Length: 584
Image 1 (cartoon, rainbow, N blue to C red):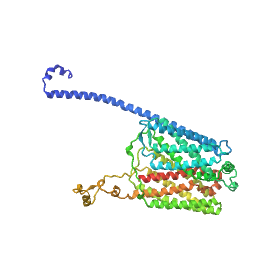
Image 2: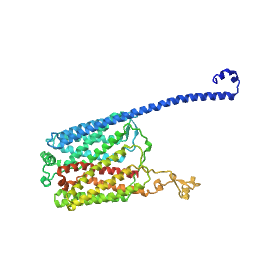
Image 3: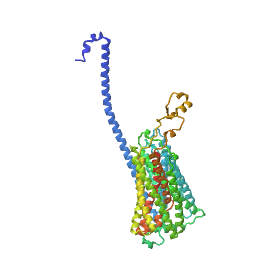
Image 4: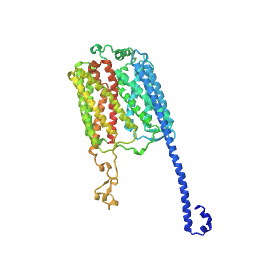
């Protein structure tokens, strides 16, 4: 009824005033707006449903890609473990040449994929919409380049060594170092440029390629660790002296295997020099493979990831912020290098008395360093307890990987320490050498727990953010003399003064300075604790208590499994401590 009223009184409305016409127009516009709002609301109810369904489809595809690529990597690693294990023992009909052929295939496939990613995938429009600011920091990539250069040098020495033995060695042993050198060069360049990429296209192909890269690096690492362990593991000359006369393959690996190699003569005089040189470069190749594996894993987690770039923090490092920590750390580093050289020289002579003296010096040096490190870690945990910074929020593949590697790698050190503790206690703790060995093992367990707690707390803290909006009261007369425009003002903002902002902000707070000092000291101490085992110190074999209790074969397996993880733990701690120092 109300809707037809205007038609019956059309004449009346034609003679109405302008105010009534305007009211009618406003009513019509309100009705139209209401209709359009209803239509838009109906469309909006369908929009989120479609968006939610699209998001679920994308998430499902991402999970399937992660799962399938992970299965491929797992199968490659399990197959590689079987081949490496078979090639270690002489009685099994799997030679080192078979292992090298398998590695050559993996390295070539990985190199081809990396070239494809660089040439094609990364250059497609909108292929990389986001960059993970936490992934691949410049200091980590610089370490990758340093270890990569040493790995290439190692491959060159290997090529020259095996060329001199071509008449009695398989040509595969010359081909593999050449292929590996090319692989290291290509991989280092790709990871340096694309470590922060969050790829949005060809996601499944990229995931498979990154998992192949991860598997290849882990296989190279596993092979290098096995060769290094066999090179450093020397069986006792008299197996019956420790009750291990029936340990079969263990002696084939060390004594008979080296005797067989010695029958192959080199046709030039530099073979021995080349061999010693590339064995000293093995630690760098081992760490390079682990660094590359970590970067490949973070890239794999970032495939298809959407993230905000404005959450990144610009971190700065100034060597003038710390003094006591670096000085104390350098003292430990120099003392450790001196004792390491003495240890290697005395043990190489083969004199039992000099070997015992070298072991005592080595244990005392380690005990002093570990006690100081434990005290500083405890102080650092107390400072973090007083720190008011918030815990980091949100998912971060880099931080999760750092924590996982830190805890996982420390298990190797824990394994060796507990084996030593049980062996020394079972033998009756006889002699000063065994007492120092027991004390060193117990203190190492305590230090590992405290250092892990300190680093994990530091990695989960938000970085300090420097603000530049503070106002500084300056010498008014001096400012007026320098700038006539501000003669009427008595307060001058900090950014307008001709003085560096760092001076105006003052020194670091005592908590920040304390954390930086602790990180610098622990960093240098972990470097010397990495150098000694990485370059040949094996007190576990020079002290016979382990082989006396467990027999040599069991003891060699425990040490050769735990030692690579312990070596990596120390170097990974260096990287993590540097990051904690930057964020503080």
